[in-house]
Each structure stands twice: as C-alpha cells, then as structure tokens.
Image (cartoon, rainbow, N blue to C red; front, side, top):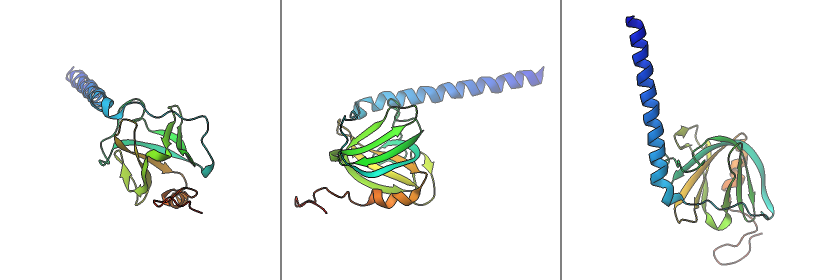
Length: 171
C-alpha cells in the first residue's frame, strides 16, 4: 500500500511538472508574439543557387544576441531534420514536418559558426548560425547543424555575385 501511494505521488508530481513546463512554453510564445510577428513567405522565384542544399538539423531560433532565449512562436521552436540552401535572393531552410523558413538576402546580418544555440551545445564551430532581421524589426539567430561541416566555410564567406559597400559588383 505504501509503495502504491509513493508511486502515485511521484506520478502526480511528474504530471504537475510537465503541465508547468507546458504553461511556461505557452507564456513565452505569448510574450514573443509581437517581437517575432509574421515570417517572410517563400517567393516563387528564389534566384540563382549559390550554395547547394545541405542536410542536417534545424537547431532552433533565438532572439539575438542571446544564444539561449529560444523562440517559442509558431513552429520556430521545433527542432527538425532540415535542408539548407542559399540562393541569390536569400536562404531557404526546409524543415521536415514544419513550415519552411525563408530568409531574404536583405535581412541577413551575419553568417557564422558557434559552439551552440538554443540550448544545444556541440564541439567548436558545430552550429552554423544565421543572424537576420524579421519584418517586425527584431533580430534573431537561426541555427543549423550540418551533417557535413566541411560546407561551413562556403556559408561563412561573403556571397559572390553581390555588391560590396561601394556598389561595385563582386566577381
């Protein structure tokens, strides 16, 4: 009898903790809703492919500059298998079972590698992080852990075919 009550008590405690985590996640989504707003739609024409698709894991997105302030709005907080590709008009992140994320070229602020993002920590330079500005004006960091990390230098190099700060076209 004592063992059954103890088991029931632990089960009840577990249910309460799960409900509190769920309530916290919903509260976070509500607080972030105005800052995040609507994401840009994927355009019909993506432009020239600059970097071929890479497979990996969408780690998540955070409010910049905090690497742990995970976005809970919509499905941006859901980790998923993904494919990342770069086009002349922007970056496309297609996620399995989730909506694709389109990052317009003019919204990209930086592409870099980091040790971790959104609570996911890896080896040095294990996560490719794209800092970009949402239509709402909020800057976020979007993380992608590639299956093949040898493609990271192509992502962190300045895009070719664009214009530099003087308006001169790159080679």
